[in-house]
Image 1: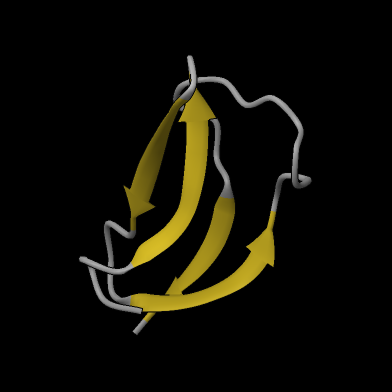
Image 2 (image 1 turned 180 degrees about the vertical axis):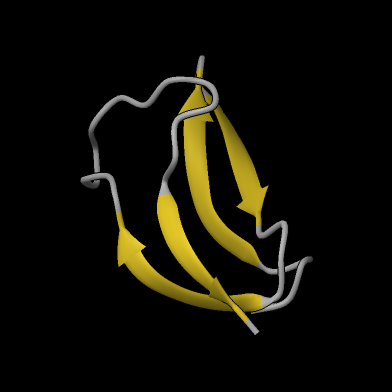
Length: 50
């Protein structure tokens, strides 16, 4: 993935927000479950930079 790649979409107050990668790398682990609430600043993925 590249720094501009969309890695997920989060719904907040009925608005769909695209979350872009901040680094170039490979997602090695997903830390959240689909459909579960998340908090601001909460880690969503583990990424191995390349």
